[in-house]
Length: 203
Length: 275
Image 1: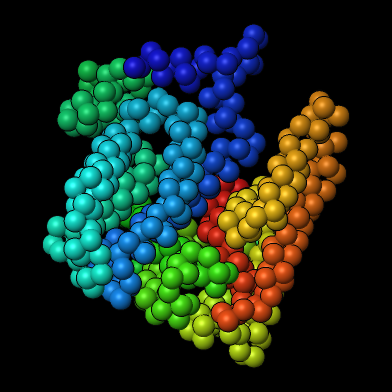
Image 2 (image 1 turned 90 degrees about the vertical axis):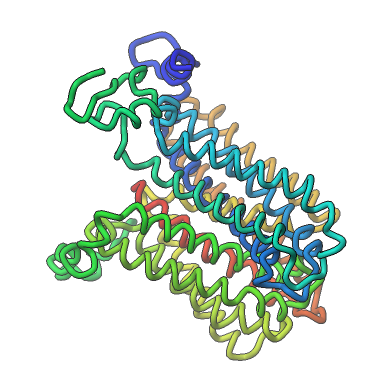
């Protein structure tokens, strides 16, 4: 993986000459494109998670108690999917600009795990819990299992956002003296910066 | 042209520099990232509620319920988002005051915030509560809110290094109009927009493959033509639909403006970090 990401960051698309840049480097150092990607990622997130928030609050029985769950979800979820497409497309672009940094970030790894769990929660909701929707569709407060899925969803997305924001901080960056647990989780030994113990010894 | 707070309040620099020592900033600064997360989560609450409430005013989205029902259910979420972004924004701002003092993007954010508060609390919410009917007071607030938003857009578009950020607003407006148009109007709108974007991307490169500065007149022209096309299409759509039971063209314009003013403020906030 390390070799692949190094190739992706430093070699893919690189032309001849000393000043030639790979596509990844060109994206990162572009005049405005990276900034536009980053800004769009945030705005897409507002649409994506903002609409999930409203649906989950209905499932929790907090808002729209007089409106059927199916009315809320069927109307809002297309907007959610639209937001998700933006978030994923821009997210892939952002990772492409700094693949090695993301690969060795504990926050990015945690974000990916939480993202997978949040998507799994959606899958479980649609494949199992939603099957009985006819019985609780018009209920002001849906049954416990539905509310539990909504609560997990909200907590999961908030955690994903938290990890995403923390990626920008270098608290646990490879090359810094830090606990061996962090070095292991981030696979720092294989990184350009290397792995250092709390005593400053290179592993 | 690029403006910042220092130009308006040049004597305030010592005060601004000292904000980092004023309570509660010494407690905020070490936990800056957590306050940033709070800011983003507040923005999400505000965004989700604002988008759905105002799409309903435009006549799309949750049309199975009347606008007043959407307002009644989302007002607390929306207000929680507003309180959250202001509270966390003030704390983050105090911990980062010198950067904001010199930032044109911060001016855009402030103008957008004021415009957003006026359009939300003076216009959009009262209009939704009245099932789309726009009162005289709401019309007056609308004029004031639009003035702040347009000022924000002018500062954004002419703000030098932050100017590319205006494309967030243009893109969102383009997608919003695509979402609210119907039938042949939507096809014509999308087709012309696609051609304009292609022209923007391809023609300048073919005409001036190496002279980047010569691209400026074309880029500026397209930066006017594309928004003009988006706004014109929206207006044609809204006026053609006429006055309905849940408001007329002005109600729909209020819906669009309220979504986009908050988006302007959010985009400018991100560009504070970039330029």
